[in-house]
Structures are given as structure tokens and as C-alpha cells.
Image (tube, rainbow, N blue to C red; front, side):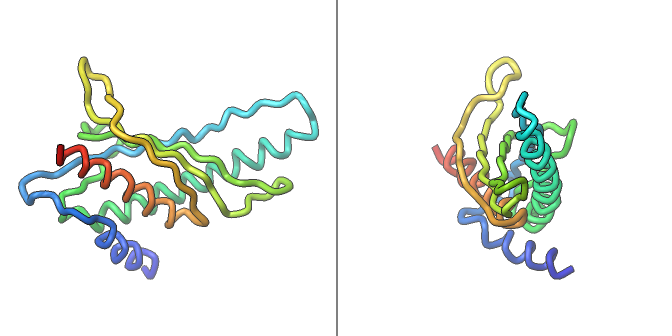
Length: 157
């Protein structure tokens, strides 16, 4: 409960500009959760496996915190669309844990790319953002903030 309350409190502080009460924005978040490093060197196999394991854990945790942050700002017009739901914007997240001797250090570098619907059912690029975090909750807040800032800027044009 403490985590949820903290996320709710932080979620409302994330948004600078509120949307009009009549308009809500649905955002779909997707993760590129399968790093594709390949190696033929037996000594590197442990690093690849550690990277994949750390990234899966990070992705699962960020996904939970994104739900909490989105829930906290739902009344402000921000809605997280889930699988198979139509969305106004798509946010893709690619991440890479920082490893030291086959152990995740807790730091993750991530890239966020924001898209809006384009011509012929394809997505059109809006903006990208690169950040890092020490934990999943911090990453979720950064991802959500980057997405909403980019969307507010795009809608203000």
C-alpha cells in the first residue's frame, strides 16, 4: 500500500499541463523486452543470460508502476490503453541494464519513442527521450513524464 500511495502522490505531480476535462488521451506502452545479444564466446554466455534476466525483471516491475502512475492521473484525462485497445499514442520502451561481472547494478538506461497515429494505419514519430533510473518506480515515472510532456507539446501545436 505504501508503494501505491507513493505512486499516486507522485503521479499527480508528474503532469504540468492538465488536459481539458472533455478530452482524454489513451497511451499504449510497449516494451522491447528481448535484448538480442549473441555470442559464440563461452565466457560471455553468463553476461547475456544475466542481461536478459535483469531486463525481464525490470520490464515487469516498470509495467506494474506504469499502471499505478496512470491510475493516479486518470481523472486528469490520461488513460493507459492495454493490449488490443485503440490508443491515441504509442510509447515504445527499450532498455539496457548496466551490468558488472554478471550482476545487475540496479541502473538501467532506457529509450522512449512516442508515436501518434499516422496515414494508412501506421504510427508517425513524435519524439524520443533517453533516460536512466536506479529503480523501476523511478523509470516508470520518467517514462510517463516523457510521454505526457511530448504529447502535451504535440497537442499544443
